Amino acid sequence: MTPPSGGRRAAAVIALGAPLLAIAAALETTVQHFGNFLLFAASVAVVTVGAWYALTRRGLLRWLAVLVVALGVLLVVLLGLSLFLTQAVMLIVFAVAGRYALGPSHVSHGSSVGAARNPVLLINPRSGDGAAERAGLAAAASSRGIKTVTLMPGDDLAELAERAICEGADVLGMAGGDGSQALVAATARRHGVAYVCVPAGTRNHFALDLGLDRSDVAAALDAFTDGVERVVDLGSVNGQIFVNNVSLGVYAEVVRSKGYRRAKIRTWGRRLPDLLGPAAAPLDLSFDGPGGRVSGGVSLVLVSNNPYDLTRVGRAGGRPRLDTGTLGVVTALGARRGGEWAAPSFEVHSAADVPAGVDGEAMLLTPPLRFTSLPGALRVRVPRHLTPGRRAAALTRRDLNALVRVASGQPAF
Image (tube, rainbow, N blue to C red; front, side, top):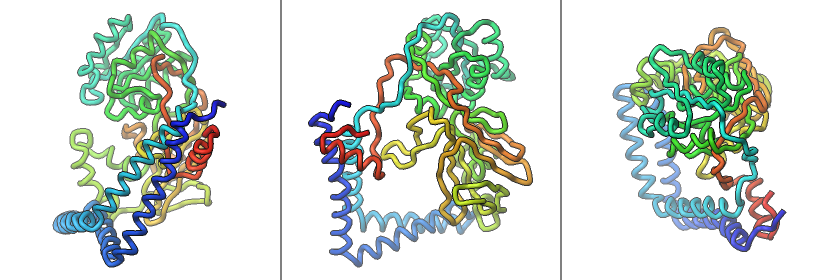
């Protein structure tokens, strides 16, 4: 492999020095102003407890907790403003320099393919509060020779996808959020047809991890006419395909609440006291984790199609790869820490049907919930002009060792 350039070596040295300077600044502040440090630590603890009460209580107690949090935050800022600024600057320096030093990602971006002969794009006009219409997606598709089918009230998206393939579509695309993407991707996978993801939803996690520019919806259409093809995994829970994740617990309960789509923040505020407050009933979920059987005290189970990387500066929660053949499992166990691991399959048990958020869509699943990774299940086309992204740096042993290698003139990985 080609040795790193002088610029990348210098960036690696800067990135390695940034955390050391941050630690030194913190130690100096602690030693010179120990009384302020103790008050700062107490303020952080008060803010943490107050925030919990503000989220899980109602009425006067909630407003008192909000007031305590506001005062605590003010005190934290006054006591630690200079330290915060130093830590923030060092974090930014580490992220920017480390990203440059580690160089481009080496994830495969696929093989070249010709233009689709009979491309079809399904459009969900309600996704992303009308993102497809704002982007002029139908007209942009038509100018590229792509047939469009707009989902109307009462239409069955899976049926529209089946019909498009029966009528000869050789590349099938979906403009919508992750829930819509999963439905159409499942149909494309079943028929062995290539798939195009167009990010016209609210968050577009699948599109993000494919490397698409979520701010330029129409640019994704180039995958139909001038693209490269990759093979990625899908996830399955009891036969239901998902492209991003399945959430059990608090999030799933809030998503299925009446009025969630119209007023999300208000719904969270209304439901959290019922789900996390002192009178909240424990979730009836059990599963086998790395440390053995877990039963009771579970507040969250999140199963993703390929593991999230929760450590990376500036990109926490993204999936570096979509072709590992594994699921990512993240759990929260009440007052305990919970866990995070990867596995090709995972099973959750319960005595009753389990509310779930499947790619953000509320569903009720019958236990046992059998999660499975489907390696290489989907042929995905992305625009040829996508360039390899750079790795975000994380304060992990792996990335720090990689930065040391780059600084010494060796390849990062």
